[in-house]
Image 1: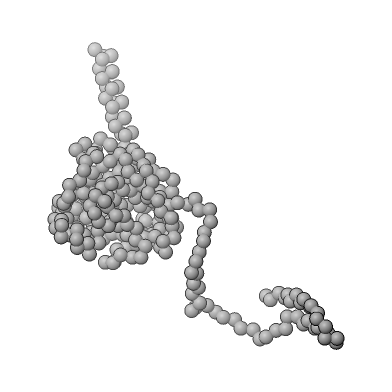
Image 2 (image 1 turned 60 degrees about the horizontal axis):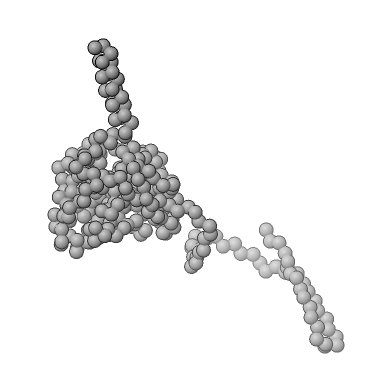
Length: 272
């Protein structure tokens, strides 16, 4: 009897240990795995407001002190207009343009308020058009205080690459320097990839859908050469230094017989 009890306890301990190593996968709702989100989506405003209140209370400016170094790829605060170079996709499923945004370290999607066609077709969903919609802890969060991902001067070469079960390709775009969350998407829209949870999360209709297959936004750094055109210099603030005329070298040619002659002169000087 004692041996049987020990075996049972050992089995329970092993089960708990495996569950903890699985990255909290057991907390994911099985009803939302690989599900097709319905259009129009119903938004859980109450859940969003409760999360926003608790999140703002504990939010700190850690990303400002320790930003992610992605070259010319920057997170910029939303100021009621789309900045130049804002990263977007065309969502074939919803037939609309969606922009990459983040709230805290959670990435999601933003729909411009001027998407009149979509708003007229799906009025229940249009109420969230001025917000960034991100997944978090089983819910969809609609945040009005968010940031847009911008590729300044369209300098960086961006690619969407495949990922599976939490894997992320090299040079994937992170949301925060101290949080292992990546910008991702699937055929239903934009969201976030969490390697610890081994899946991609899609915010939709107040819930958090999750999928094992997805794509991750990456920066292509395998550049062999750069070709630049239409280069312009900002000379308004440049300091122009003028010097008096200076004779660099003198070359004299004398031809008394007025015959055809060839003379080459090599003028060189160093100005410091």
